Length: 93
Image (tube, rainbow, N blue to C red; front, side):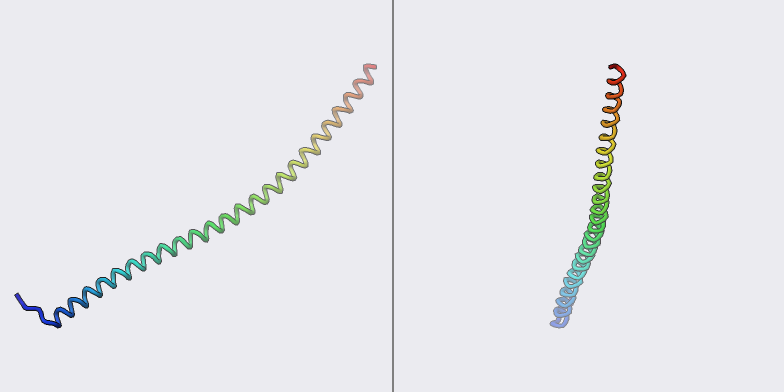
């Protein structure tokens, strides 16, 4: 078996340190990729939220318009029924 020289020992420590450094770089890159994907997901969620808010505002406005139209139609029907009742009452009299 060959005896290890100080240079061999130093080279082994250097290689070990480089391996540790490479593993750390790989972990860091993976973490950065996850962060980038999460940032993209957050951006897409914000876009979706904005679209949903806009749609909600539009639907609220439509609901208000429909509610007013419903009220107006209901009042017209009530007036028409009252007029019919008056005509029928006059005919019975």
